[in-house]
Image (cartoon, rainbow, N blue to C red; front, side, top):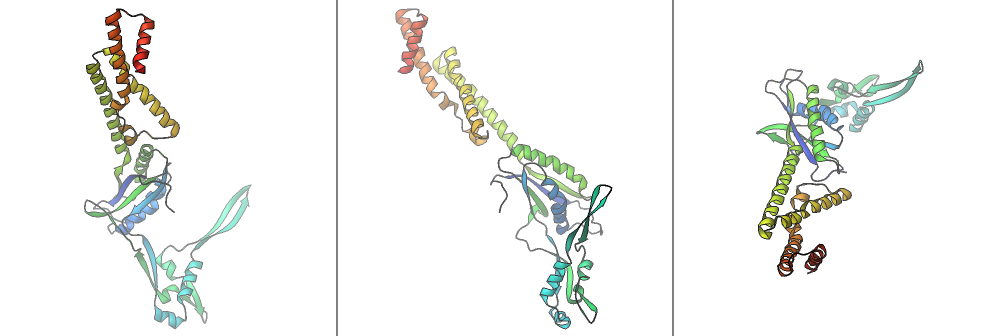
Length: 318
């Protein structure tokens, strides 16, 4: 099952990197595994709460794992199978609820945390016992911290990094969601370890703003150019204005239909508007009306309102 998103749902990307002098709690430099752990357990859960974000993907670094590697010879000595080791680990790595305690009208929930947290915890899990002597995991296996096999990596400026991608819920507003994610990422920075920085590398907001500016500029320039050409062709300022009035009327009806049907106003839907085609029919009708009115006035002199309307009707029908 994939996220409820589209192929254009990747609206925000950021990298998680450590400064050159940053050190972990043990004094060592930050590793790719440590950065991935920060991404998966600190940043990702907080970004997932942003309205309109359906998923946060992670790439790069390594997923931290605890590896238990049984020694076949020791398993034979202690008469323990691999399945026994697995069952012991599963049974001793769990949290359980223990009901509640009522006190002064309040219910205090009780739970028994039993998850394994360290390598020592794993090693001290008892598998079975021989002659009242417990056989522990560390007696039959080597235990250590390892990495999950990965199929890809992320780099920035030639240096390996951890890359996070926020996926937008289908139907959401990409500009609004991207802005909210950017704002949330700034807030999350305060919760990161010292020396670790989460920095945006792609923000859909910038693309949307540029697209809106491009569409607005093209629409304004196109409308003005059409008005100028109409005036030059018709040689009549009032006729040019009447023809140009088709542009805002057509835009109004188009946008009304887009709102009713839920079509977004984007570069694809608005960038295809051709004002030359929109006014094409109006140019033909108005030009013919102007020509017929001029001919009738030349023949019959000043025309009254009924004669002008009749001339316009005949010219339009023609």
